[in-house]
Image 1 (cartoon, one colour):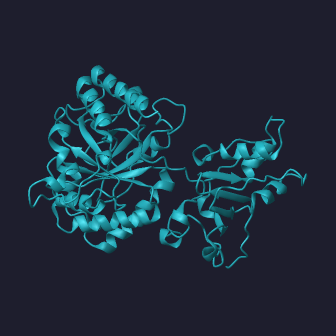
Image 2: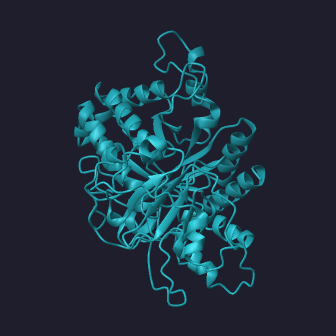
Length: 453
């Protein structure tokens, strides 16, 4: 049913919890801001620019804090220091306020109105803001669908990356199927030697998120053994070599309608699992189908219409030869390297020594200077290119690739592969268990951080 638009101001929220009318916060969110009520009719408001969640619950925490400074300035400081990632899942009991989680009942959050989006505000009806069966198209005009019942603020791509493919699921390996329950834990070197993790792999036939992905993603920011650090990006990797041979084709890439419908499903992952992006590892087989590439582009564009800031990465062979990869790369940049807002980065899938750097970067960064008929028609900015690095590479090789990433303004390293504690292992290229290479990644990550401070 249609409801009256109720645009709550910070002053009104403050006044609702404090009798002294002289102590009203004078600092507005930087906006635009979504104002809404939850199922208990408690006011909430979310600043889209800063990514801060303002709410009665945070206000109650502040009013009940031990701080003696109960003034508008301290209130404002308190609010702006509580980002979504720190608010997500709060369940403390605050002086009788009660135990509550912002996402206990995400289907019961209701959007009431918006500031600076008057065309939407005047026509808004109270609808469940996020529900398992709700089509994202219903809320896509809600400024990128940012407000999803306590959704964590996405981190974005690091300036320099060490991205590790961590093996978590494989439907051909007993004990590691999509539906199998086990407790993945990172090794210490993965917590300090990487700032981005590719959770590997989602089966493109079902496109169901493996239980192991959910479990490891849920550890982010927790002070527990094997947890994902709070500032480490989580990327869900789809496909891989084996899953590109079967299923072939990927059914959701056979028509534009199916591709866009799948984008609606995948758009839910960010709110459900607090991911930062996806990796589209379509290789020989499914990737060789000439309809796969154009439909993958439709999939990405639809997904980006919901989440423009979601990271989308595209692995590619050192010499471009998989048509879907070629189509996606050519659609993602203009010939001069200007982004078209499709994928955000490419990763060179060649893992012999430093050859991804010495032999294959030019195939993408200088593609328009290659021979006539070269399949890549655009110059990918070096800052969007990840260098392939074998998991078991020597510390010397890792260091050389890391230093080249800085000196040549490349994005960083894409590492294949790294097993987790009690996880599956593919062959002999594993990072884990080799002291020299594990130390090499930790040192390279420290070097990157030192260079980007």
